[in-house]
Each structure stands twice: as structure tokens, then as C-alpha cells.
Amino acid sequence: MKTTAFFFGIFMYGMINVLGLYGQCVPDTANCKDTGDPGQIYPAELPDAGLNVMYDEVVTVIAPGSYVVSEIQITIMYIRVDSVKNLPPGIGYFPNADLFYADSAYCIQITGTPTDTGVFRLKIYITPFIDIAGNPTPFPQVADTTSVSMTVLEELGISPPQADEFRVYPNIPNPFSDRTRITYFNPYGDKVELRIYNMLGILVYEESETNGPGENSFQFDGRDLEPGAYLYKVSNGKKSITGRLIKSF
Image 1 (cartoon, rainbow, N blue to C red):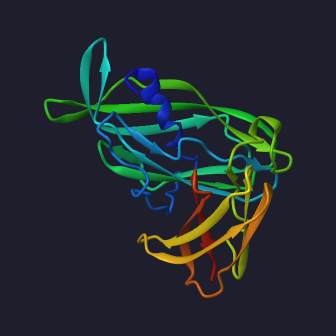
Image 2: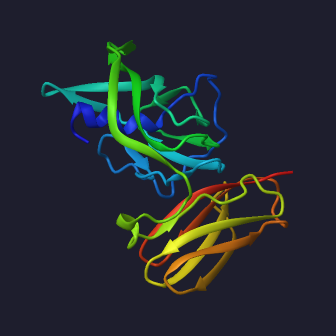
């Protein structure tokens, strides 16, 4: 994360959709830590989306305070994301703010129902505002074609290159009123744990199960939950994956 290109690349997640709406997400500061390096993001990899299946993920970003251009360190006051191109049809991007201030945590709700399959490589236009004599001054806009992509599959499942990788898929349905299914692929048949937290980080539910290798699901009964947003974490003891579920009224 020391180069200008990489710095701008991490902000592909800061996509504002054309309606200019704000997401109602909450930053996951328990997993996204400011380590002192320029910029942090969690999770680093988005799960695959399924065609005509509701998709809902939250990405947490800690905006960097500086970057280096021609061996000169530039102080960043905040980042403005101007536009993004080549989004999967049906997917919207909703940050919880229009400006990302340096060294502060923000989040982006990525949600919608994709209506076309494929690998979508994203292009983002960003304007950084730098500190000149204490005043925020726009730096030239950068058009960044990132190496990060979002994949929409005909059917959610495991492709051969992922056959030894622990995976968790977006819960279905989401939002839900009574029950929702959280599907995971566990390559080794380890014990798998599900924990659900409210947006204050308080554990409200947990369970575990042990199955053979392959695809299995937690059938979560959420009738006792208050309506609102929750975070879930699924772990096989080696890797943990988080997601977001919404209990409807």
C-alpha cells in the first residue's frame, strides 16, 4: 500500500451509486484495525454473487492520512468518490458518508439483486483533497482501473479452484422475517460455529455443528430478534467470514 496506484485501488469499495444515497451500515471496527499503514479495508475479498439472488455485504474502510508522490509525502484531509463504472446490473453501492476523512472508519453497504452474470472489473473516479496551508484543496481527479472484480454466477457453488477453500455465502432471504439460511462450504469437515451480533457488538446468538466435507447450511430462526441490522460470523476454526443480515418488521 505504498504506491499511488495501490492506494487508489483500495477505494474501489467506496462506490457511490447514481442516486447519491447513504447506506445504513455500521463500520466493523472489531475486524478492521488501523495498523498505521496508509489505509485499511475489511474484508479484502467480496463473496461471489448469485444471479437473481439478493446480495448484501458491508465493507469497512479506514481512510489513509497520506501517500507518497515522487518521494514527497502528501497529507490527505479526505477522499471524495466521484463515480464508478462497470457495476453489475442490479447492484447498488451505498457509503455511510460522502467524504472519507483521514484515519477514520467508514463503511459501504453493497446490496441489490444482480440481473446479469460475468466478471465485472470496476473503474472508479476519485478526487483526493490535500492539506495546503490548512485548507482542503482538490488534487487532480484520478481514474483508476482496479484489478479487483466482482463475480456474478449463474448458481452459487464451488468452482474447482475453490474446492479447498472455506466459503460462506450471503444469507437467503435477506431481509427476512422469521428464518434465513446461511450456507457455507467446509472442505475438511471441521466444526463450524455461527455467532450473531447486534450493531453494538453484543453477541445475541450462537450455535455450532460438525458435518462432513462439502456444502451445508445453518437454518437460523430469528423470530425472537428485534427488527434491524445484525452481523454474523461463521468460522471453521481456521478462517472466519462475516456478513450482514437484516431482520424485517
